[in-house]
Image (cartoon, rainbow, N blue to C red):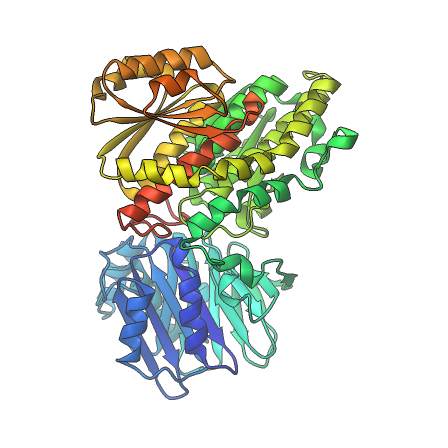
Amino acid sequence: MCGIVGYIGHREAYPIVIKGLQRLEYRGYDSAGIALYDGNSIKLSKTKGKVSDLKNKIEGEISTDGTLGIGHTRWATHGVPNDVNSHPHYSNSGDLVIIHNGIIENYDSLRKELIKRGYTFQSDTDTEVLVNLIEDVQKSENIKLGKAVQIALNQVIGAYAIAVFDKNKPNEIVVAKLGSPLAIGVGDDEFFIASDASPFIEYTKNAIYLEDEEMAIIRRGKDIKIRKIKNDALVDPYVQELQLNLEQIEKGGYDHFMLKEIYEQPSAILDTFRGRLLSNEAIIKMAGVEDNMKKFLAADRIIIVACGTSWHAGLVAEYIFEDLARIPVEVEYASEFRYRNPVITEKDIVIAISQSGETADTLAAIKLAKSKGAFVFGVCNVVGSTIARETDAGAYTHAGPEIGVASTKAFTTQITVLTLMALRLARAKGTMSSSEFRHHLIELETIPGKVEEALKSDAYVKTVAEIYKDTKNCLYLGRGFNFPVALEGALKLKEISYIHAEGYPAAEMKHGPIALIDEQMPVIVIATKKGHYEKVVSNIQEIKSRKGKIIGIVTKGDTSVKELADHVIEVPETLECLTPLLTTIPLQLLSYHIAVMLNKNVDQPRNLAKSVTVE
């Protein structure tokens, strides 16, 4: 959530910053702003609304000249979304300008102290407090901007990624990070600043990712200087080459990023197990698991921590690990785990799952688990992300950039990685025979092709969406491995169409939700042949007798559910533990088409952010 873009160099800054903000729109935001410096004065423009609104405002309001600029997309925390609370923010003197992601938790006490010293505030934000604190330190101690930023940040409590510049030093931008991600692109006598690398990928492949409690002074004509905020120690910059390319972050002819990412799942799943799954040799190669096999085999249990869609992937993994490897698994919301004083020991394995690798609650859960001596294994999609650096070991999914706020390919690639882990541990523990192991590997290799086949239901799913697009409520039911898929299907519908939807284990319907069923209630039931099929058919009969509208997700060739359901959407047959990789496809498509038909902003649903970097 929130997005930072900055540029200092020999090019015009405005086109780079505005395009960068457009690239970061996927993160979720409610207002946007830009500050430019042309060598004489700062020109600032900001507005509630979208980057397109900002672009229109700028072009009628200010000159866009200047080779230094910073821009921001804000997701409101302190203060309602409006023009005044939007970033960037000036200091009282007008000399300093700042953009900020995160939350300054002690902003109120700092604000009161600054008011006593004569400072005034135009906004309700914690960010305006921070820029004036920096200015107060700078003036009272008569020091340079970088040192003032360092001293000020040692006085704040919270999370931040900031970029600040002083119009009296127009060849310098100071950046710092704690909790929120920040990348620096290194070019030829030019530097780029962004929340992730997507805004500058077409200009440079070289990037530095700041670690927590690090700050950098970026000057034209000089090397970047990085220091520790706490103790002022110099840090050697680590420049890494980006693997991202421009085509990956463009729509590629699709109407929305979400649809593109749904259709990328066959290749994303293939990329995730490519080089790891060698079915001909009956081998799974995962360095993070192999190097720590003794810890996994000695573990009393696995605790999975995650949020949102990643939590649902963790629930699928619970079924897979327990069924195949016979290891006890607990799945926890990271946001609850960190606050309930959990019992964690050195014999626990904690698996942290996050698409972005920056989820604040999951990061806090990791730190708690490590403090108790647990071994922490990360599963994330973004190379160089904080979770990738903070965990003891891990495995990347290879989904590629996921721009749509509602996760799709992140979910299926997370399940793919977790399935590989469970299979490898099952073989190591001896809970699966060599023939069973090989059979699972061969079947997993067929999944990308079967996902492609499942995607062929798109046209029919669209006709179903047309029928139910105006519904106000919806139930999703599944059993076993597909109960988490029901939860995920309901989440997708809520996220992008704003229709109230709930997922339940099918057997729990009789314990309350059945009271909601009438002729106005569509019920999506996952009823594949593998996994409690007869029981699910009985649940469908109970819905039918109460006049509920039934949409069945069934195995290709099914006849029993077809006789009962109003609509059936077929997926190919596979092993029971692999069915979530297929049954989730029509649910993603259904949510997508309903949202499009309702004219919702599919890629940037209201109030949501792609990367939740604050509590």
